Length: 257
Image (tube, rainbow, N blue to C red; front, side):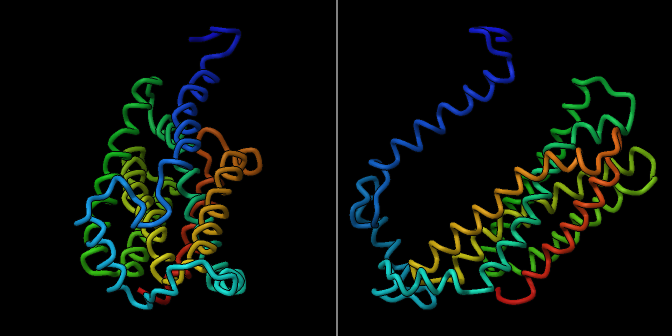
C-alpha cells in the first residue's frame, strides 16, 4: 500500500492497526457496564461468582466498592504507589527497548537477511508468551507476586548482561531468550499486584491510572535512547541502560505478596 492515497506504507500500518482501537475505545463507553449488576453480558451465575470472589478479598466492604474523594486523595498521597509507578516505568523501558532494538541486535549477531532477522525474533517472543502464561498461572494459584517478579527480573538482567558482553553471537542470542523469559513477567504481574493491594475503589483507580500512565510513558523515552547513547549496530550503551532499568525496577518487590 505504499503511496496509496499519497501515504507511505508505514503510515497505512498505523492507520489500519489504529482503527479497531479507536472504534472500541468509543463504543466501550456504552457497551461496558459500570457495575456487576448492570453487566448485561454476564449470566446470573457469573454475577454471583464475581460478588463471591469480591467478598473473599482482604479489605473488601460494601463501602469500598464506591467512589469516595477521601480514597482518591489518599491514593495521591501514598508514596508507595508513586514508588511502584517508578518501578513500572523501569520495567516498561525494558519492554519498549527490547521490542525496538531486538531485530537490530539480532542483525548484529550474524550475517542475516532482513527476513531471517525477523524470523529469529519469533522464538524469543514465543518463549516470552509461554513463560508469562505459566508464571501467571502459578502466581494466581499461590497468590504471590513478589517472588516471581524478583526471580524473573534477575533473569531479565542476566540476559541483558550477556548481550552487553563480548560473547559469541550464539551466546548473545541465548541472552535474548533470557530477556524475553523475564520481560513480560516483570511488566505484567505488577499490573495485577498493585490493584490487589488497594481494595478501596477510589484509591485503586488512582493507583492503576498512575501505574499505566507513568509506565507507558516509557514508550516515549525508549525509542530516543538510541539518539542519546546509541552505538549501532550493537547498541551496547542502550543495553547497559536497560540492564540498569532491570536493577532499579526490582526494589518495588521488597514488600508485599
